[in-house]
Length: 82
Picture 1 (cartoon, rainbow, N blue to C red):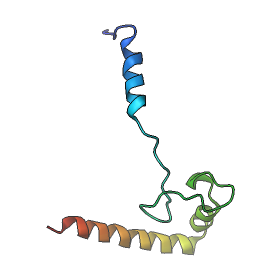
Picture 2 (picture 1 turned 120 degrees about the horizontal axis):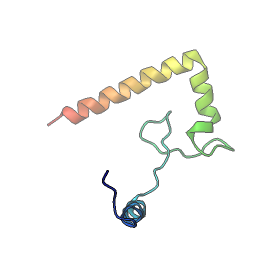
Picture 3 (picture 1 turned 60 degrees about the horizontal axis):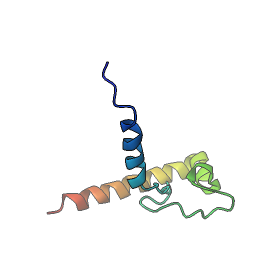
Picture 4 (picture 1 turned 90 degrees about the horizontal axis):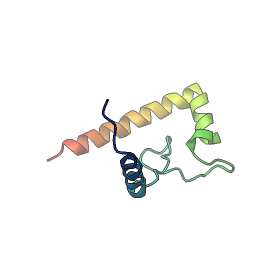
């Protein structure tokens, strides 16, 4: 089995990590927008009370799905324009 030289992997990982930027969390309720931490105590969409309420309510979730579908269709149409 081929193995890399003893220190080469460490250099490669450091080089990758040096250039990698931290990714910003995106708000699932506002496609394309970053999470603005609009709910007190939230540190991202994973523990946002507003996201929880929308996803937990069947009617709101259905409205959200329809809105998301319209947004995606609009973006697809804009991408196809010459």
